[in-house]
Each structure stands twice: as C-alpha cells, then as structure tokens.
Length: 317
Image 1 (tube, rainbow, N blue to C red):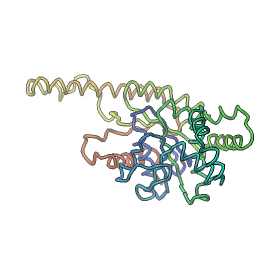
Image 2 (image 1 turned 90 degrees about the horizontal axis):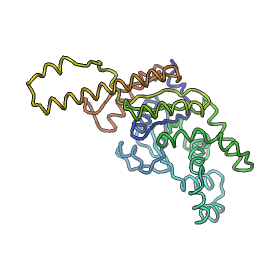
Image 3 (image 1 turned 180 degrees about the vertical axis):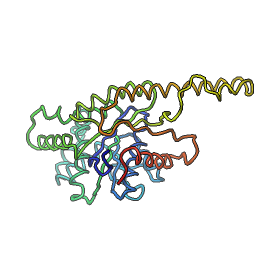
C-alpha cells in the first residue's frame, strides 16, 4: 500500500454536507503534522470552525497556526483578489482603482466561475509561490472543499476554462490551474461519506464524476462514523435477554437503535460493494467516536481519527 509520504502535495476532500469533511481533513492534516510536515487545511466556508476546535479564533485568508506544524485558512473572494493582484502580481494601484471599484467588484462576485477560479488559483499559489512571495511554506495543503456538488465542480473547472482558449493573464492562469489538476504528484482527491442513505447515494454519484474530472482514480473513499465493527444480527441475544426487565419505552428505544445500526451496516456494505477497486487506496472506515468514551471534543475526535487514518491510509514509514 502507498505510504503517507506518497500523497500528492494537494489533497481535495470531497463530500456531501454534514458527512465530516472538515473533521477528516483536519485529522489527515494532524497526522501528517505529527510526522513532521508543515500542513495547511484550506477551507471555503461561511464560518470557519477548525480554528475554534483548537482554541483559536476563526481563521481568514491568512494561514493561522492552530497547533505544531498545523495551520488553517479560509477562502474569501475579496481577500483572494487582493492577494492575487497586490501580493502576487504587485499591481496595487490597479487593484485599488479598478478591481476594488464597486462596479467591477459586483461583476466579479456575480460572474459564474470567477470565485471558483480564484479559489483554485489560491490553492495553486499556496502550494508553489507562497513560500517565495510570503514565506508561507507548506509541505502539504489539505483542501476542505464546499459540499459535494460545488466541490466536485471545482475539479471540472480547469478543463471548462481551457475550452475558452483565453490569452494573456487569464490564459496563463488557466494553463497553470490545468497543470496543477492534471499532475497526480501535485493533486489528488478523496471522498468522505456516512453510512446513511442520502450520503451513500450522493457518494455513488460523486466518485465516478470526480474520477472522470481528474482523469484518474480518487485516493480513497473515507467512511466516517462506520458501524462496520458490529455484527449484523436480526435478533441479537442482548435484545432478547431484556425480556420484561426494562420499561417498555426503553426497550422500544433500544430496538430502534438496533434497527438504525443494522441499516447503517447495510448502507456501508452497499457503498463498499459498489466502489470496490475504484480508488487507489480503497475503502477507509473510521469508527464512531462520539459517546464511546475518551475525549469527545472536536480536538479529541480529530486526534482519535488521525490515529485511525495512520493505520488505514498506509501510515507505515
């Protein structure tokens, strides 16, 4: 199995809203940081949450250290435009008088694909020129993408823009993004899911679409909150042993929990069967952490999942 050091420089983490993309992104980053890498988690969200998990304020576009060798940053279009034209191109006057003007700013915000192009452009900059231009040197960038449809569309963007055959500054930027997304040593993606009906359905649509967009298999499918360690029993002995020893409402609740767990096992098995052999590193199950003892804080869950990922993603040195 490939080792963690063989992961690409940029890893896009895809998945439906609510499946734990941020948790998995941060857990993978924390694992890589524990091995001595300088790692950035780059988000695109209205409310940055990873910083507060580590007792820090929410991060903005400037990378913020949250623990040893681990940083987080959150994309914003206005901040990214300023960074691109002022910090990268050195066109401060043009930015202030043209790009930052009200009319152009509204046009840029409304134009389809501009925000996505700037997001990918910032990822590209963070993984290449940021070290030279701003001293921001990262061995790995973990991209916590927006929810499934939007995140998957990011992978299509370079090819879509390339069909425009643009020239000049825009053409150069599109070429750079195409080179980033087509290089397996530079970029890769993994999908996160839950053993739930809607999440499984969306993942079964997402994985082949993202594979086609990238032109190569995803790194892995990560199943968060797996119930796969449980036995699938229609009438387990412990339920039968309850008899009349507990109140009826409690017995009903326990039966409902049992039925839910069996359903989760079914959806997990369905996802595993459908996606077997479709990714580089296979199917990665991360067991439920909440309510099972240990530290159930976000930081504690991240630490536990980092240890699980080490064993399941080829963590051997």
